[in-house]
Length: 200
Image (cartoon, rainbow, N blue to C red):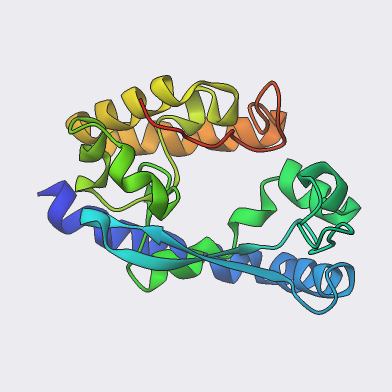
């Protein structure tokens, strides 16, 4: 009952209220990133949603598009702007995803949507993370985020799908607020973001 009926209603309500409350911050960050990224404050990318269906995720663009002499994009740490670093550390880059929740592509809580090219690399068990809508935050995010291995992350995602209920979602939301305040697990040990998944 919760998964099929109440969770979607709660998602929509929280996303609408959250976006209204955060709209002043949203507009300020938009303006600053518009200047820092040559008129490109947003980052759009295809991600697999429920049942692997692709949708366009929207985030604040924290890195510019500067390229080296070879025409390739520079390393992440060279493209990360000062305002982008602040936005990432404070998790403000996730605010636009409230729009993904409002239109029904995402949930407030669920496994994070990863890259489409990872789809054929998952094991059968790992692929069950797509049995629910992806989330802005999730069980893996409050248990390490980018600072844990892929194996640990997928195990936590699958556990969430198997145990999804209201009290667990509420616990994850509360823990997420704590993580945002103390800024835990934003980067892995060797990268600004999570390393690329190469398969099992």
